[in-house]
Image (cartoon, rainbow over all chains, first blue to last red; front, top):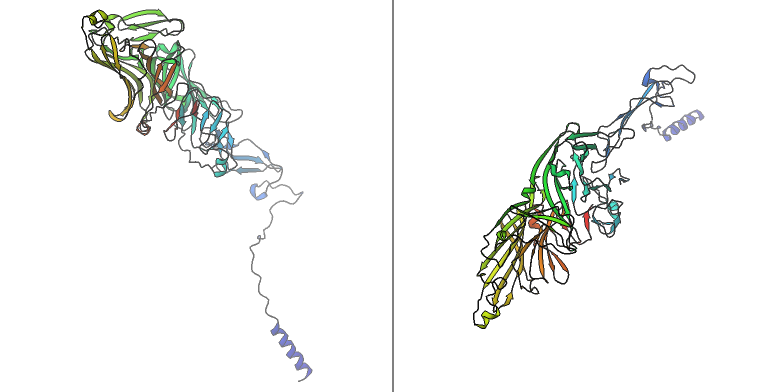
Length: 103
Length: 480
């Protein structure tokens, strides 16, 4: 066997000894998304939800309550249960928090 | 006081039997816990149920703290204590058709009004809603005292009575002399509520009926004073049928009202209204106390009046053996339930002496006219029946059958709570002795939500609003 043949044979054996690397399974990580928030210093778009929320938030008029409220177990006392609070963020965009009805 | 649990529950979780002696609440799980509350007066207890509230459970950990979480509230005492606060004798909770609770209050302000104030709406800086609706009450309610005898379960009606409190004798727990009773009904939303007043009785009906036999015998007097009024103070007036008399209460003594001869008789009946309550259907019922007495036997020669056996006749060998029996029946009627006490006296007179007296007291409960149980109590053994064995004297709502100066007996009705009435026997022989007429079975009364109890006169009792069972043996007690 020539040296050339020997080299080819060793190369062939080496390829057989190394298994094919399996394809990694997806672990459900966060999907790649593209931020729509403006870069610092960029002008605010004022286009609503797509523009994100800029702190701080300032409450504006329009807070809403559930009519039944949060009640004592006997039903005699009723405490206010917030249903909705509207805010305006630092960019002047409206932000709304909606709360679950009390059980 | 509102308590908040870590699992989101809130309310008043301290319930049980409250004792004035200790200020503690005996809880259903055993042990007593302290409750910050105004003292409930008497044994009244009401359940306030707001529709739509889901069932609530008490965890093991909460029970260990003495807590009982309920889907309803309890209002206690004649002063109507709720969440530790006394709403007042003329206030209660009205649950409107929209399930909102309102404090209803009967007020006198330029005429009678029903004031509805939103109850339990916690909101800072918001005016509490309040509405007033005019109502018309009989003129009697402008004087003396008014109180609520009972409240319909949903607060849509109350039984309102006008009364005076009579405490003339040292031996008498105060007695209500009722003058008038009405039902006040409320309906609709608070802002546009309709208020109606329906008379149930007035003073002319206080003694529902009266009759007496012709006074063919004068040995025994059955006095039925028809009415006593202006009774608070040293002077009182009383009335037989058609006749009015006036007298003074003797210093420290009892009042003995003797009917004119034309109204004395060997037998007679009388009844009077002692209270109002709502039955299990919500209908108004009248608590009526009736007294009747009958004489059987030959009583024509009673030695008291006709000393046929006096010594001169005895010397000549003339003897009479008059034997007679008087039976006085006291009945407290609560709807279809009667609490009945019979006092019987048998007397034989020979040669000017009283041979024997085997009077006894028997009480039983009858439901729908069917005798449910009976009990014979021999309690007259020590009573010597010398004179006036058949005398029965109206005593501001009770009756004293006289057995001579040293021993006498009274049967009078007592109100323990809004659905808790009974009869009490009081004997005076070397000091007063009270014995509340014990009902034979509570279960016979539970279906009618009418309960009587057996305690002495310093004690009150109440019922468990959940089970209807009577609660006894505390001093005094009330469900809170």
